[in-house]
Image (tube, rainbow, N blue to C red; front, top):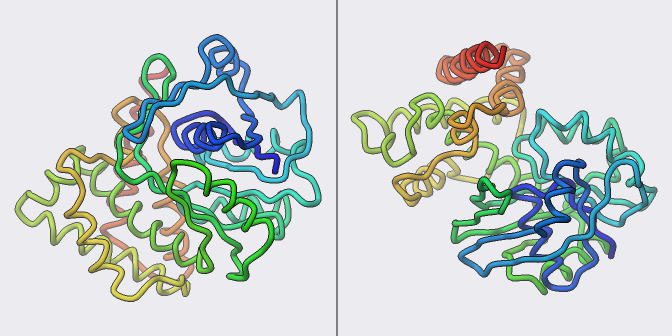
Length: 308
């Protein structure tokens, strides 16, 4: 099975490196700047589950060829550009496994490549790139979940499961991947919302007076939007997610918060904005989520002003 990993950042780079480490046929689609560094230094992963240092197989958009599987973990604001880059790598039998948070990207990928070429996917991992471009992975959980969105098992998902079975990563071939994706969407939207709004890690938010009630109220509001559009969430998901919130390290930050601290782009339109649009279509008001989204829009204005 020929696997193409789009990018070699914290998520794709990590899972791609684990696959390559186990002997799978893995190639990374990267931009020329990243390709240059990888050719010079190799792909380096510093992980609590074992370090990796490999010389990865690389391609750029100028050298297309067809792959069996595409692992897609780009940031949402790069998706349109990445989809154009992918055109020469996706054939009739290729399956794209998106690992982005949220759901807006699924619709975009379907329109570009066809619904039959897009599976479901998500992951749970905490990674970042250091100043040397090395992937630093610190979380106990390093899990990737994939599956057909129809809920019916397939040969291509079975083959991908067999590939991950040889790695050190945690994995799951799910027969209810849509539910898994929506469950995570609820969690990550709540987490990114409260940490970016307060500019604080989740431990400090929960420890503050009224903090736990605020987090739960926001999560309930987001769930109401998801319920209105008939998203397949698990039973008692708010209670379960709140229990998970309390199990996080005190200093745990969302990736969106870390991006803000670095002055980078954020995925507010993809996560919070998408849900607010769905709420508007349903005639719903979401005061908590609207306040969060406004905060992200203010950040974007300040970011853009600093870059002038």
